[in-house]
Image (cartoon, rainbow, N blue to C red):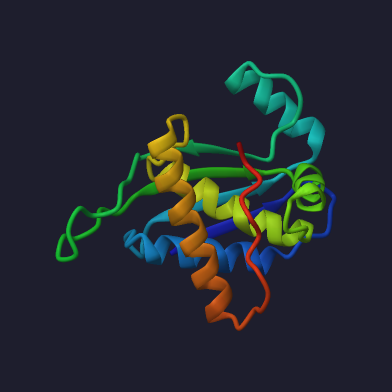
Amino acid sequence: MAIDVNNESGTDIDEQAILDVARYALARMRIHPLSELSVIVVDADAMEQLHIQWMDLPGPTDVMSFPMDELRPPAKDDDEPPQGLLGDIVLCPEVAKKQGEEAPTRHSMDEELQLLTVHGVLHLLGYDHEEPDEKAEMFGLQAAIVDGWRAERGLTGPSPAPTLT
């Protein structure tokens, strides 16, 4: 899996954890190992510009996903996954820090960025949370992936609860 993490935010983040959780999520979703993903970490001003430009919404947001080849997980276990460019995930540590501090299960900025990375991967794979049934499916899958990754790394304590709406 070719994953690039480019931190343009000026904030010190755990880039290795973002790389690892993205790789884990893509493997768990059975995405072809030669597929490519880019993760860009930006400051609040840059995220606000993207949010306005692409969503026509004011203020910075936590994560945005920009799919390229619209890859999807294989329908059956024995299907060969397609290879391609997944796209870009853009993260904002300033928003992540605030969300982590305000979450019911208060957690660190890095933990929130890990959760947001998985959230972004799922968006790139076609998952959404506009409708209640979609939200239940996506957030359930997101929690399972984050929990599995944390367990594999021997991390203890509760996983971050989703702070996205």
